Amino acid sequence: MTGSIGPYIRLHGKRLYGLCRTLCLSVHDADDLYQETWLRALRGFSGYDPARAFEPWIARICVNAYRSSLRRRKRSPIFDAFPSAQAKDALLEKAEAPPQDERRELHEAVDELPEKLRLAVILYYFRDMDIRETARALGIPAGTVKSRLNEARKRLKEALHDASDL
Image (cartoon, rainbow, N blue to C red; front, side):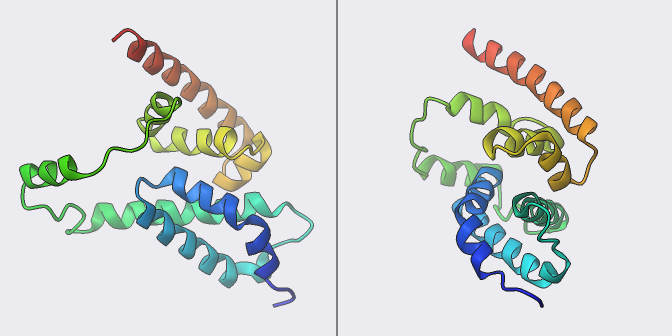
């Protein structure tokens, strides 16, 4: 390995953790994703080109690790370890409500988007990546990012408009 990943962790660690928290519903899942992302980055660091921006590179690793964890959960027989829907609901009722946030409706609407639209929105709007960086992080063409963002905006506008009618 020609360089050390340590300075990158210090420089980009907080933003990466923010991305992990945005992608994951629980703090524990975000912690696991954060660690898995840095482990994968360390393993692949020799392939990183320092002439390119680091953040899209690490974001792509994070998104890929996140997608892998989703696939594992879908295949896992213990994904929903509750014996019944009532047991799950009972536990959820005991959980503390998340703190109120003026952007709560927006975040909830984003969480309801299909995964491919949600990832584009999170990287572009919440992580402040430009179209090119978002495309590189997701491994798709820039035109596809634009298309997904456009579709996401339409769906969010509908969802938020419907929510305001309540």
